Length: 192
Image (tube, rainbow, N blue to C red; front, side, top):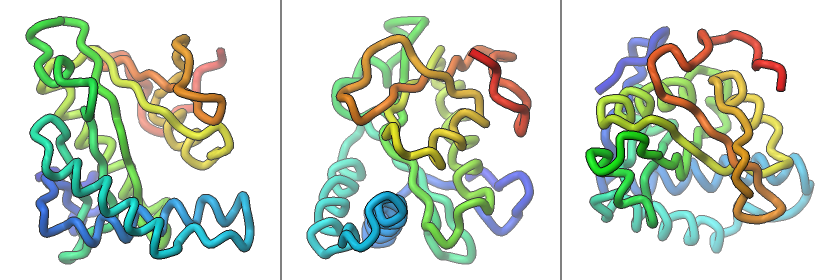
């Protein structure tokens, strides 16, 4: 467990199958809030979207190569993150490659708790796990139009990667994990 830096009641721990419903609900809510801002009136929080999110998180919670973390305050799951995932089995065993890359597949926070440090606490826990496992870099894909998420990651030191994104709607970001490679928390993004 990792206590959040400024919120002793917030902890980040390994998610369990018992957390599935809470994680799926907050993921559905976060996606709906993001999409409602871009497409007002569109029902992104429909039951079908919750079912899709539930299935995706269920798969992640049942895989050995996809660690899932959740941020919890007073027994309530407020955020979740998953990394590794399909196609990254070698990355989960970095002893095969001293420059192994890990992929942050998901990081979602209940919209009612955006800006409260929950996302930063999850990110910090991921960084600790990745460094402990010996990863040299991390990558993630973020939607082009998700300026809130892009700003969040830029503030944590993530930079655009030179590799192509999976499609025209996403931007691939990279984070070097070597000691000293990250800017101090809260510092402005470097000019590129």
